[in-house]
Image (cartoon, rainbow, N blue to C red; front, side):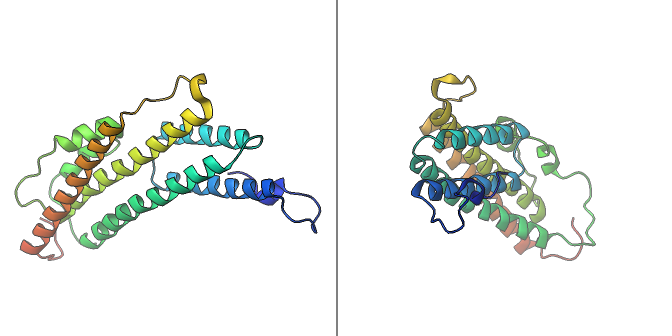
Length: 215
């Protein structure tokens, strides 16, 4: 986290903030917000490291350059990211409500194979998953949650990539080229997958009402 914005402002308590100081204060506030919302989704450590690096580079660049463009980019990211994480939180809340404190699952959940996977590895595992008939709603929601989390992390990675291009330009070898159409198709596939498994959870809950014991 960066120091509070006032640390970079005039030392005269009676002095009003200049436009530059105000812009930087907003920039630092958004910087801290972006880091917090990203950390809260438990992204891959490499992604978090890239985010911290690019945000630091952006702040340093904005000290001697116009802040409007990057500030707008962070604002846009925060809006889109909050919409995606809200759905993830909704699925998680429903999953917790579906679980019974006294429930004891028999065997290993099919969703267990998704633990510890990120990015393409997680995507391939999700696409190759075939849940058996009469899968409990809890398992369907676990799979839906994993897919929604991947959507969230993909959006974070996309934001990092755009910022790397803006901040570092051709001076970095870490920039990943994105095919926008492929990214959108990838997103649509995941969104469809999430909804399908939410629907499966709905059907399972209807046909097998909770009894305090997961089958």
